[in-house]
Length: 176
Image (tube, rainbow, N blue to C red):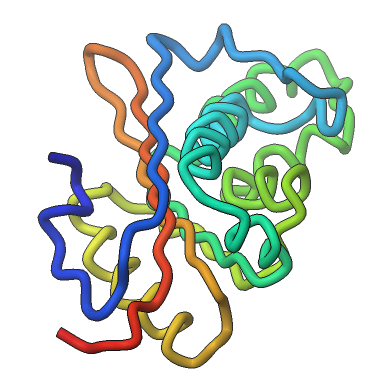
C-alpha cells in the first residue's frame, strides 16, 4: 500500500501508477539531451511518471494537453542548490544551472518531455504532510475541469535512498 491509497479518494479513480528509486541522486544523469541542467530528482520524477503513464490507456495519451501535475517533496532541488553553492568560490557558474535549481523544475521536466500542459505545482514539504493537501487540490482541478487527469507525485528520502511514486487520477463522476 502506498501513501495515496491511505488518503480518501473524493470521487477520483487511480488510472496509473509508477515508482522509481535511486540509492543516491548524484549518479542520476539525463537520458535525453532536453535539459542537461535539470536537478537529478527531476530525472527520477520523470522515470516514475513514465512508469505511471505506461499503466494508462489511449484515453490518457490523447488528453496529454490537459494533464496536471503536483509534486510533493521536502528536498526538491537541494542537490543542485548545493552544487551551485559549492561552485561560487570558483566564480564561474552557468546561468542555466539556476533554472535547474528552481523547486518547480521537478514538476516541469515531465511536462516538457511528455507534452503535459495542465496546471502544475510543487509543494516543498514532507510527503506525509503534503499529500492530503495535494489530493484535495487534484480533486479541485478535476472537478473544475482544469485538468482531465492529475499526476500526483511524492518523493521521500531515507537511509535506503530516494523513492518517487507517481499516481495518475481522473474524475469518476461521483463524489464520496
